[in-house]
Image (cartoon, rainbow, N blue to C red; front, side, top):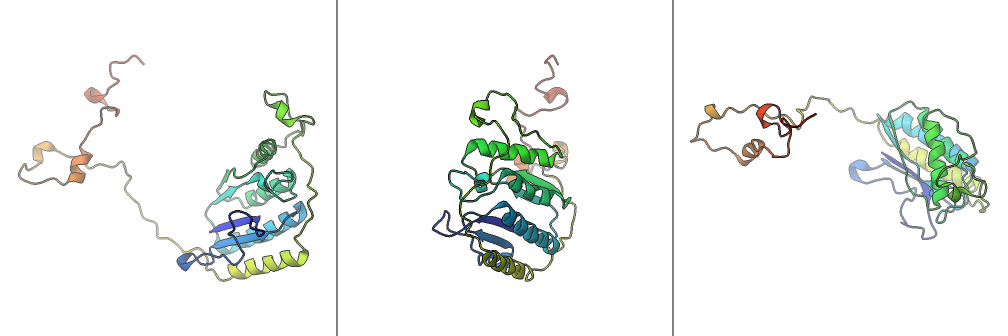
Length: 240
């Protein structure tokens, strides 16, 4: 399942991600899109994020979460149009972390580089349960954070076009779509032989009149740059 919170409308790139885009065929209802308008702020965003993500976890029951922290939603981004502070952005990481599921966190968009660095620094601290001081310590890149040299940035002042009625409508549509899915289907687990497993082969027992298929022949090829024990070890004469 994918869940995306993003700017939508006004011919904003890439032009996809309407709330009605819910996936197709076997994937129907497993794509959740939360389209937002210009100027959304911390309070509106984090409230909506918590409600929807909590419902997704309840209904889909994921075994793991990949969280992409795109920083173009921050106030002051060169291409973005939201009013999120770094603290508001990081609050979403805290929400997901509290589910105590295996979690892989990545970066994403973000076009005001000093704020991207600020954001991912704060969120790394969140993941490590470490509260960071607001003052950025002296370092070779400190000039990028002048003149204040602080981690936090102020909220933006773009007009919030996301009315309460609009956000409520989006929320209800998303929750209705989630009711249409079943819980994640159970997968019967079975042991799969590892890729590196090669059955033992005895040349003395091989019948020379019996053809060997190409796949089996390829399995017997030894690359010169591989490592082996004994006489085949390319490094056996090297000092360790």
